[in-house]
Length: 263
Picture (spheres, rainbow, N blue to C red):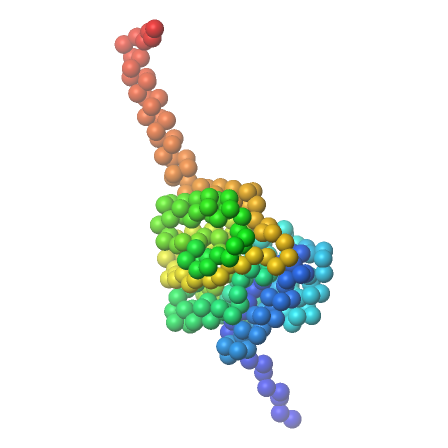
């Protein structure tokens, strides 16, 4: 008796971190599956649930995704759990809140096919719809994060926080990733810069969450800035420490002849 043909292994895995996205995750999954089919990619959709309590898991299963669970809370933990469970060679990360257009999936697959290690979406050089991002994030917090990454790590990107990106499995294995929160996105870029990954940016359209305002918070922004500072210890500790030491030594030299009276 002939053995049944083996299923074609996925080339592309679309990984969706998810926590309480029941209103949108089903649409995102169906859009991803439709894009995979229309573009001829052998692929899968993996949803990593991060403790949802609103029926997101049921919606994801109903829409056709494979669901895995991550008990450690945080965006980065959910991304890492989904990436670990994915089977494809090309790993595409996208948020489950409906803010990105999955019809642009080919922009994140074809560069990897042609030899790039990492593809980053950019909202700054793409299109940002009205009310898609709060003003303090759009005009202050996220530009500050991008400026820090460019200054400290010589990583020439225009958008460090875009949630639509892709990476080749072999390149992912070279990165030392461990951030569990929103700083995961910038940590990936810093690690990629250290490893010299071949990277390209592609424009995306960033649209408002369909049913509620953006969840981005000042606390998330601060965590990213803190992560960038801690990953550049020479600028955070060595340079200020050296300047203070020089200042203290200068004061000691001034006082060697005796007390210095002022006034």
